[in-house]
Structures are given as structure tokens and as C-alpha cells.
Length: 63
Image: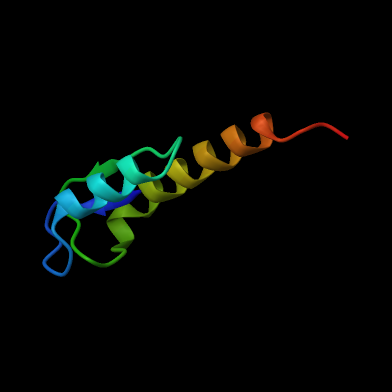
């Protein structure tokens, strides 16, 4: 779960609760981000997506 600490639509505790409800999920908070994807947050978001994709690929069964 990626959540902005300035989100006015969903309180940041909602992201943490969702992550706790999903086995293996992580919760990341982006300081200064609301309920949008501002250009300034893209590098952090892309890094988090890359990390997630790599972990998923490492965990996938080899065929």
C-alpha cells in the first residue's frame, strides 16, 4: 500500500489497515502527497513499484 500523509479522501490509517489485512503486504507513506500522484512523487512511486515487481518475480515459481 502506498499512501500520502496528506490524503483528505482516505485517512492514512486506512492504508495501514489495508496492508495489515493483506498477507505479505507493506505500507509506505509518502510525505506531502495527498490523494493524487504528483510529479514530484514519481521517482519514489516508481522505485516502490520496481521493488514490488522484483520481489514478486523472485517469489514466483520457476518453470
